Amino acid sequence: MRTLLRTVEKVLDHDVNLLLLGESGTGKDYLAEAIHACGKRRGKPFVKIDCAGIPAELFESELFGFEKGTFTDAQSRKLGKLEAVKGGTVYFDDIASLTPALQAKLLRAIQEKRFTRLGGNQTLSLDGRVISSSSTPADELLAGLRRDLLYRINVVTLTIPPLRERRQDIPRLATSFLARRRRGIDAEAMQMLVEHEWPGNIRELRNVIERATLVEESDVITPAALPPFTADFVASASRNQWTLDDLESRYIREILRQTRSNYSRAAKILGINRKTLLEKRRRYGIE
Ligand SMILES: Nc1ncnc2c1ncn2[C@@H]1O[C@H](COP(=O)(O)OP(=O)(O)O)[C@@H](O)[C@H]1O
Ligand SMILES: [Mg+2]
Image 1 (cartoon, rainbow, N blue to C red):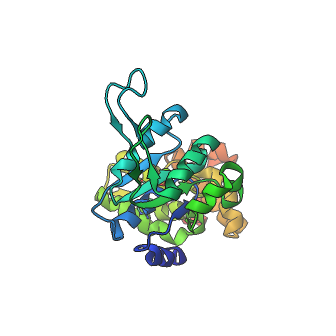
Image 2: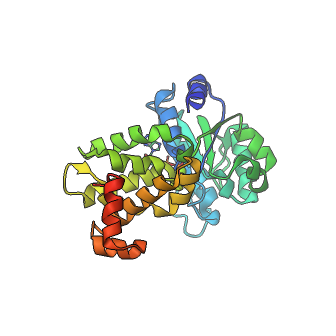
Image 3: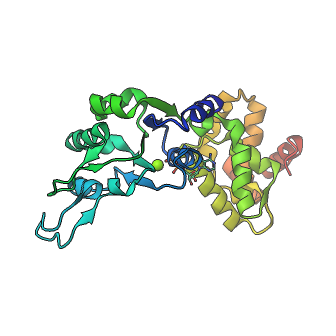
């Protein structure tokens, strides 16, 4: 992240085209907006184009606009999103989801910094910084994206690592999401957040915390308010080189959490008797 942020600082005030890569939920939209808000174009529009969300047949009219009478139902002129950029930033989210034909049209606009409304002949200028994003890994991007467009949008690539590769950031992110709800978190619950794999990255972390603040009635989030993260056990165990004792104590904690400390039910799930469970609980210092 430090290397990434150093690069961000360097490109902030230079209009090089940026390509943001990273799994879903790593913060590409967040970074694009931050770059806009901190660069010299702040205060001007930030126009997000959701390439995956706009149906292909509507994409051109959304982007370039159209003149009155271009289609039977074109009652009046419609301005395109590119016209709204006006010296700000245009952000093409999930650009690799565009069809090759649309990629070619977009390439022309980005390359020439000019476009016309559908059915019109007035040349309009595309005035602004261009940021694009994709959640496709860099090596697969070539398969979905025209090479000429890729080279054009990808002057500088910024790759945001998945959350599981920067676990040191989890406590700070979690604490900041909790602070918005004026809540705290206990050490055990925080440890669970740090050990989770976070396939949905920061978006998932934020959702888990928002849900926990609804479930937990006290001021401090405890493990009981977190969803079951058990599927991650084997991944966490091998990555952190847990001993069998570590694994056992964590599994017991997890099952006690899920059964809300119903010892008879927990013992049944664990396949041991209640007395053994109580002994193990004492041995591992589980509250
Ligand atoms: N560095 C960050 N600090 C705080 N919140 C963040 C950060 N990065 C992302 N988020 C939050 O995480 C969620 C997902 O971010 P988003 O930018 O939409 O991810 P992506 O576009 O990569 O799928 C959003 O709610 C966003 O506000
Ligand atoms: Mg996004």
